[in-house]
Amino acid sequence: MLSQAQRTTILELNTQQVSKREIARVLGISRVAVRKVLRANSTAMPELQRAEKAEPYRQQILELFDQCKGNLVRVHEELVASSDAELSYAALTAFCRRHGIGYTPPRPAGQYDFAPGQEMQHDTSPHDLELGGKKRRVQTASAVLCYSRMLFFQCYPTFRRFDCKVFLTDALRYMGGAPTRVMIDNTHVVVLRGSGREMVPVPEMAAFAERFGFQFVAHAIGNANRSARVERPFHFIENNFLAGRTFRSWEDLNQRAREWCDKVNSTYKKHIRAVPRELFAVERLHLKPLPAWIPEVYRLQQRLVDIEGYVALNSNRYSVPVDWIGRRVEVRETRDKIEIQLDARRLVTHLRIAEAEHQRVMLAEHRPPRGQRDARPDPHPEEKAIVTAAPESADYVAGLKQRSRKVVTLALRQLLRLVREYPREPLLGAVREAGRYGLYDLDRLERMILRRVTREYFLLDGEPDDD
Image (cartoon, rainbow, N blue to C red; front, side, top):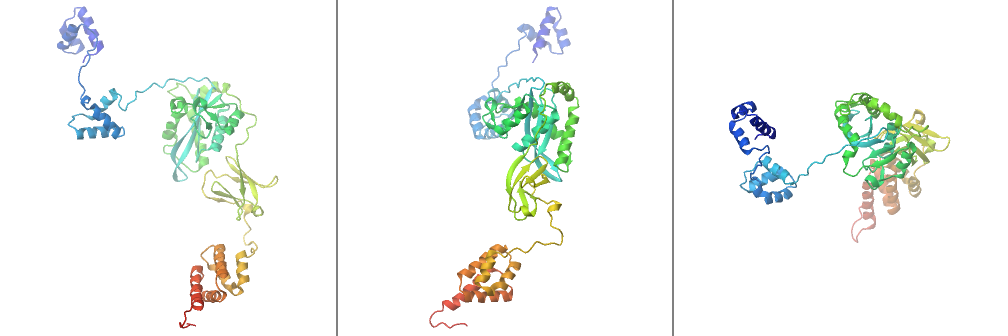
């Protein structure tokens, strides 16, 4: 079919008295096509009047579309199998597209312009990488200044409110100032209630923003284009920074991420036709200065020191002096440290383990000297009660503590129950026999006691006594 430009050219050449043969030769078309255009004497494209092959099956297509949950591949398979329709898959999809069946026309995204220092966008995204020789998923937190496109990101095992404050503090320090607002995507880490313009931040996060002089704002739910400045770099991070790289530790990962940001921010970007670092030289003048003193972000918790002299935090255990056992302590968790404080004068500091690794961390000063053992603790209350009630079982109790497969406390409780519930003579007889053969299975000991009780206390008339 001839285009509108070709039709216009044919009519113009005809007015210049150019022959039909020459027009056809110049345009590389047939003389029949030239004659049709001259006969119509119009540059308008003729409307194509042709019935659609899928039109007779419209109702069936609508029904199959619901049954197949919008999968047009399955709709085409079922349509061809259930009828004599000679319809290609391309014809079916074109028909559905023209008639709006399962198809929403695209809408233009628009364009957002930002003044220097006006907005920074923040978001997180999960990524897979190799850390410490293991494949694992991390949460990548990113922040981008909207005017200069300055990028900063870090990775965390989880991303909760504490991690958010740590990241934003590092990001603002990296930028050297704070913007007027920080755009988020309605994350529960910041949002207390509402969404979009009605979003109300958590008081803790609102106070954090007030300290630096910015305000949290959120875009409408589903309007991801509003935060495109920070959404776009995630693909770049995954396919450039993470591609082919392995990391030894969290410190190594985040240090190399910072170095990569320095390199990327100094590189020319085609989509903005500028270098972010050069644009940042202008934007930095419009950022709000950081406070003279920025307090370290911390998370405060209360803990009891366990009987082994450790404090449990995030599935890891940190040592304290043994004289703190059973005492309540205050645990202050920062980005790099764990501070355990008993009172104003006694404080223990550990390096923080970034994730739950079920590790025990003991400082050298908390380790008892080699060769010195703690004084033997007092006997268990159950042991005292057993020996008091049945002094003859003392040797069996000592062997039970050494050779029982159960926890000592539970074994002693079970033996105390046997002492209290069963007659003395069958009990002591069974204990002597069990001690002679080295039997410390208390369930078996109880069966031995029951056999003796049966023989001695439940003999029927006329039944001989085995003893």
